[in-house]
Image (cartoon, rainbow, N blue to C red; front, side, top):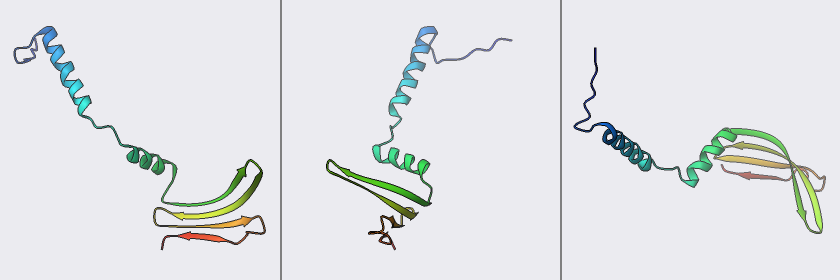
Length: 99
């Protein structure tokens, strides 16, 4: 049994060229994601809706350096609370954002 593909009058190399052109057109029409969409995708992969963490932040200038120990509670994207744990001079200071 033979099977025949009707390519609408196109044969051989012309049919392959038409197929390649159709695929190239389809690829060209596919939209690349924008910068904002890429950042949102990466954030969704790295972060969940809620997060609790203990962090250390080092602040350095050419003449001075210090480190802060922090505890953070975040409910994305609405609320966050960050409390300084150390050094003792700033311990207990907090920052809240959201409702």
